[in-house]
Image (cartoon, rainbow, N blue to C red):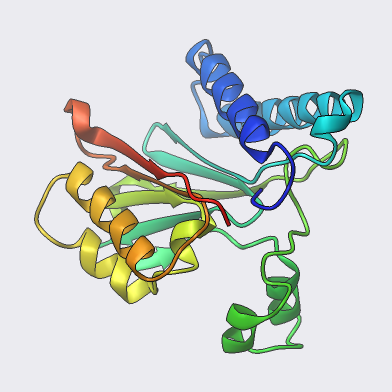
Length: 221
């Protein structure tokens, strides 16, 4: 979480541990996979929470999280915070996840409009994140692989600076995933992003080594 102590450490702890443990799993169904994700994301949440409480220089650290698991024709998306998952389907881009931010909660309750939420002074204030409390609720969404051309996971350093039309335009261009990811990051920086930017593009139908491309750009807020 930008602006908080040791957010980079919390992020690294969560991603490395979840990735390592996932490689050791043998989940065969969507139900099993979702249950596994919920259990182990909460294990990482508690681990980050305990470490932050133990060391004063790490007090308050936390991270957002968005994850995708591909099981038997299904895509399981899980998220906490305001990192997002997008689904590209036949030239249509769709935001899958729901931001856990104070401004978005106000928008969902009808107290402010979507335009007002984008510029609200508390748009970066999170209502849910990993490691801040000893328990956390994970939102899950199930997508169909056959209906999906591309999955994009990203941090808010990207989504805050690029409209969905701009993202869609880049994703629909010819080129490799590496080229598209680089273009997304560069465009977000050109638009003024000063936050950490991470983007992961996944082609669920590709069988080559470039099925997944992760690009990151570290910037201080």
